[in-house]
Amino acid sequence: MRCTRFRRLVVLMEVSALSERQRTAFHHHSEHCPLCAQFLTEMRTVQRLVRGQSAALPPAGFQASVMERIRVVKSRGTQQPKA
Ligand SMILES: [Zn+2]
Image (cartoon, rainbow, N blue to C red; front, side, top):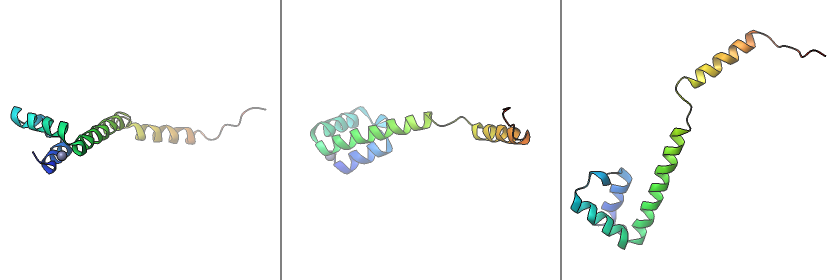
């Protein structure tokens, strides 16, 4: 397996679609090629960050619900605190 093939598989996350023999070649390459091993580690970090990012996104309709509450509060007018 060559570096270009290895990296394409990592980027496309196609590793799980590999045959047993290809997967063995993939792991063999990552164990013997420090540059690709580092590339794999970096891509896994990116994957983890992306997953964490999507989990932190607000649920659907959140923004609309917040904007609606702001409209309701504004329509009530400004309430002055009693002195
Ligand atoms: Zn390599």
